[in-house]
Image (cartoon, rainbow, N blue to C red; front, side):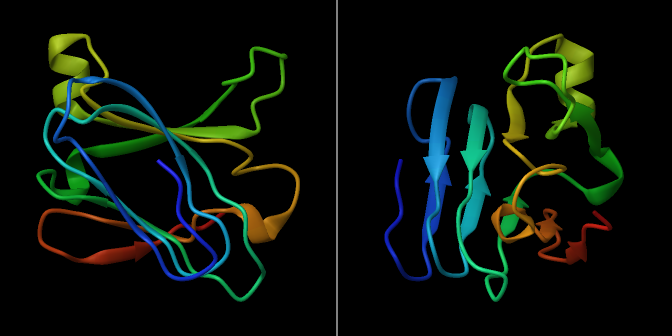
Length: 126
């Protein structure tokens, strides 16, 4: 799924549970992760003035985890994997998000916020 040059809202979870790609582009983009969205791989590109958000609509903040990840399998853990307690319980990435380049490259291409099922947004410290 690809956004345009403005503020985009990209919603995942209404199709088959598999892996989807998300490209937000410039602007303040929101990536909405609904139940059974599968794994969403986000490649966000923008400017330093953009604020981008990943919103887990059915998960409380204390059930969301984030770790460095090597999505490109190049030995560099510059990506971020968000996963949930449910992902751990069932052994599948049902509502996971991989953010490409969260820890490397251009800071303008990072996700700044994560929100939970209570619609509370939290600033990412990285």
